[in-house]
Image (cartoon, rainbow, N blue to C red; front, side, top):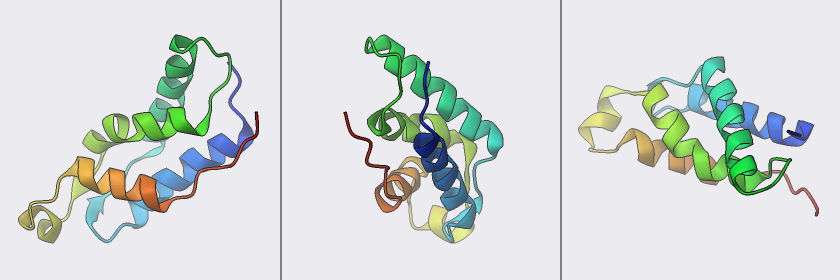
Length: 100
């Protein structure tokens, strides 16, 4: 299963964004990056492809990463969820543009 270097960098940037987020007390670890990569490969295979595309990563980031982060007290008090924060991060980190 091929994962382009730009997609691996994208996953790395997503993980780094969780670590730098002011809304989080604890961001995702490298284990989260590995899980997101592994799940993206499986997602691509289930779609009949032997390569991962940025949409695979975007589709899976919330379910794979949301339980791997810890909100800070202020964010939790406001009623925001881990899923919302990861979704915001996915929207804020530009995905690579990989041609067909």
